[in-house]
Image (cartoon, helix red, strand yellow):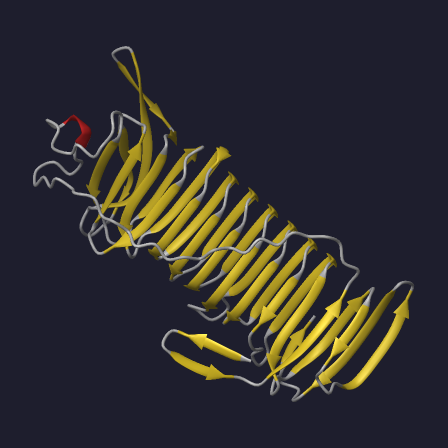
Amino acid sequence: MQLHRHNFKITVLVTVFSILFPLTAVSQSAVNCKEKKHQKKKVVSSVKVPIRASFHKTNGIFARFGVGDTEKAIAVSPKVFVSFCVSSAPVKINGWKRKEVRAFVKGREDLKFRVRERNRSDKKPAWVELLGVEKEGRTRVIDSCISGRSVELDVPYGASVSILGKSGQTSVEIDSIKKAKVDIYAGDISVSNISYGLQAFTKEGGVSVRNSSGSMNMQTVSGNIVAFETDINEIGDSFKAKTRSGSITMQSIGQKDVEASSISGSINYVGTTKDYGNYSFTTTNGLITLALPSAASFKLKAAYGGSFISEFPLEDIEKEAGGSTVYLTGMLGSNNGATVT
């Protein structure tokens, strides 16, 4: 099999190891991971005022802003933590080299940055919370959960972001930041170029991650999970993916502690196993397929209720039946290889 990465080609001799379970019809939709070029919007700088006013109110200069659209920015620490709640609005977050957070919301007339903590050395905001502002007559009321037609944030590359979606459909796209935590009610989560880990939870939607490092924890109730080219940032970083109704596809996973489980869906793993690594793959009703290099080394522990097929020359095979379940163990290669369950 030929694997293509970027502008060069690596040819790998691959052997397939699979466990087949009784299949049910599971629709597996591919997750499209297209990198979108971010278009930065104009920002009016202000030396004296750290938080800029809503742009749609300035003499029609920013005509591209619709009525009720708002854009604000605040100077921050390069490792700022940004948190906010959103309701029924798509969210896009992009990393950039500026030491400021810029927020643009379509369909909302006002926003507020609440500085919850400052950096001890330079006194710049180290924790910023983004809030909505509602107007009731002449009174401005703070709304802790932002609503609108869309929410877009530019944050420093070193920023960490926490997003909470309480209700409605809320899709989230994140690119080129340090760390992300996303917990939404419904919608797809797409993440790329994260350097220090991801936590992603959605009840109704898929999760995709690529070109990212650190510990990964992804869960969905109804949806697929796709991961490409992940790696550790620190020793001990793990990879966990869980779905109740959906498939899980993993390719080029660099973490040594890998766990993937589905109640009703297939699991596909294409890559390598590392020495002393632990790889666990579980599905109640579906197909588990592992495509590994022929030089792979691992200890196998398998339990299945259908059939087992292996192109690897397993040694020390032990098989025991317990009702409708078959328990099988075997060894391939050296004792310092991985454990595959």
